[in-house]
Length: 118
Ligand SMILES: [Cu+2]
Image 1: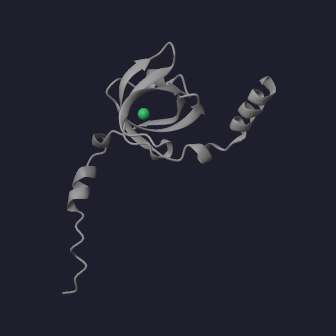
Image 2: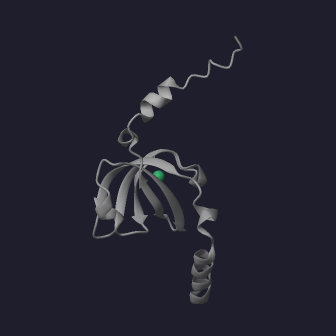
Image 3: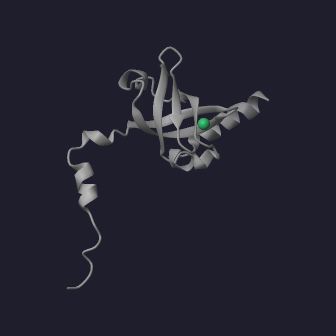
């Protein structure tokens, strides 16, 4: 049993990250647990894991994230299923749309009605 388990762990660590965490998921941070390096995230649907939108706890790959992010932050993240119901966030970034000036204006002005020939 021990050999099987270590083989399994070895296999997981050798897999390239892209194979098991391609999908970026939108969410909002609800709670940050610094001591256990976990984050409660209200997340949108995760198709890779066949998971509907919900609020749940994730482990964090990088402990620094507990200091770099705060409750209420809108985020995008990628998650890996470690098995046994343990999910770990392996990529995390803020998805604050209001930080870029003029971004919204640019969107509202980009009309596609100029393709007609006069
Ligand atoms: Cu979930």
